[in-house]
Amino acid sequence: MASGGGSVRGRLPDVQYNKIQRIFVFLIDEIKHDPMRVVNSLFQKDAFNEDDMEKVEKAEKDSKRAAAKKILTIILGCGHTGYDKFIDALYDNQYYKAVFELEPG
Image (cartoon, rainbow, N blue to C red; front, side, top):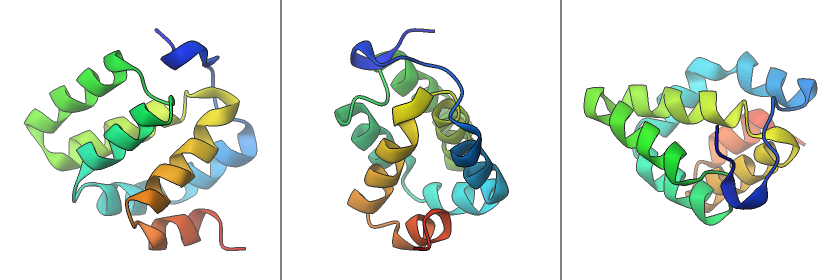
């Protein structure tokens, strides 16, 4: 798997992984409205690379829900910086409810 902009890939730290896993279906339902906006933000933040973008675009041909799920599965393997970049991408795209569910404090 290629890494974005020199980022080191690997599973998210357990605490972050578990936060996403705990509300996985909720996040899919939120992101499915415009998954490519989130992907573009993640690419801009160097969390996603071109291969990741292509995977989501391919999944979107099946459905936006499939694209949202693909985003989450890729994020779960984006290493120690992926979670914060994901939170930022959600915030930038006004998915405030999702941000609050992940980071209520």
